[in-house]
Length: 347
Image (cartoon, rainbow, N blue to C red; front, top):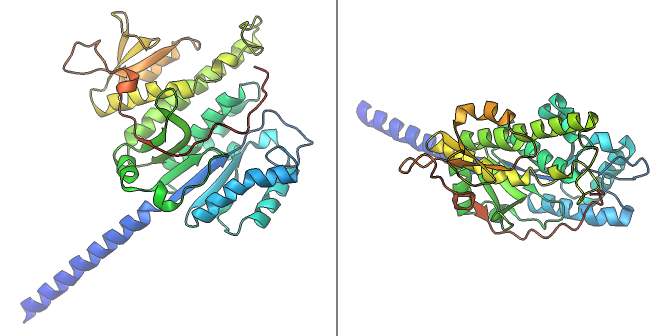
């Protein structure tokens, strides 16, 4: 009799633990934030809201943000801005307008300057840097911080003009698998086969977070710092004839770092060896480094040099590597429109 009671207790205990585990898993799948952003080209004291335009135009822009909130009531919806390039009045007016527009109470205004990495390296968002460089870098700051701090399991970034996706479309079976296996899913399309205007990340894959931090963040912060110092020293006194700005070469550099980020990521997952290939071409003079040595090696690379990081393939000679477009990059087909809100940054 005692043995039967013990078996019944044990069965109930296992069943309870299974239910608890499944419940945690279900909650885990929907612990997420949706993040959107607007960074001004420069500070305009006359600008009434965080985004430029009159109230009617601002309402139209913010309606997409509020629609994301209504389609994802269980998510935290973050709208990021740079307080160095806006006023307290515009923050207050935007907050008040969002309260009127949004039926859900899950929208937060968040300042990029509160992020630890921006506090440590405030120059990385200097208005002297090209605005698209700042946008691409800030996007990485946001996603890395949210995953490193583990406040939520997943973070979604969407450009301000992208129509919302509900929870079920965000977290379909393939997407959840890729987020668990690789830690990232990007929008399908673009010159590299993917776009960073929509992406989803998770904290399941430490190698992915390490690759993002080293290649997309640290390297490009170093580029920005070096460029600003050189600008101060007058090294860019004769800008490239194609551009008005001497720092225009930084404009696309964060986006163009993605192939190297994925090269580094796949090396971390496989051989721990990389080739630094000038202009993406592997030659006998290409530098082979271990993933642990990458940071020191990169600091010696000129900021304007074009290179790609490629993982070595063990079954071939050491200089035979995957090329960028052959690396596995998890993507998701979404409707990511061409940017409607463009900057005239004088480039």
